[in-house]
Image (cartoon, rainbow, N blue to C red; front, side, top):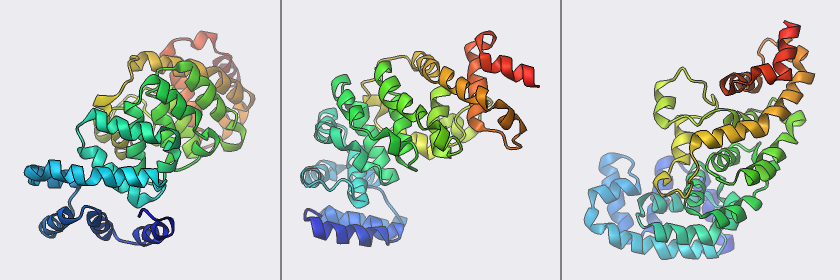
Length: 306
């Protein structure tokens, strides 16, 4: 994996493998510890690194010491774009309890986080690393995000949502993330991933439990419980200090007026559209929740047309 051409071959084989075969390939990176993992997997079908550590706590320190230098070399070689490397990183970060060691990884890769967004494991890694970065390093990370590409990408748009809902610098969120997304609204208004980014700015983040059990509160319908779980890895280590409710109100304020202007111009079309538009629904709910419907030109136009 540390050689460019060999890594491409390994990645291809990994991408064509079954879930169990993928786990076995990852176990191979762990040397002799991988043999023990395989023995446990025979009994339990599939096993994560965390499962292994719970079953063999006496081996935890040795295994993490084995993985850490491997990860450092893979990052130095620029191999984090490969999904097998992302899976190895996800294993490590899920089990490493030292905030200092996780931060060391984050600082090394902070300017290249988009490269991780090729798999759900990579999403977990990117969210974890962003969580532990301080305000200055987060600013550096955000400035290196190609927002235009990310908001319509199956996995990358989820990281955009995570960043917007954890970044304390509202002005940076406004200029670098949401305004960049809003510039694309004419071309991507029907794209579910694009819609999901803006709906997440209009709605309070759902808890993992509410997404599983259902809730009468309107939450982003495109986010699954697995998505939310990925975004919450290492949440206990997050450097975010702003109250989520305050951040939510700030995000709504950023996107409300541009969205009102867009839908006001096309309101007649969307009122006649049988399926409607989920983003417009989220906007009306946000306007009602903020208690400023009497100040909304969109609401006035809506009442006039119906």
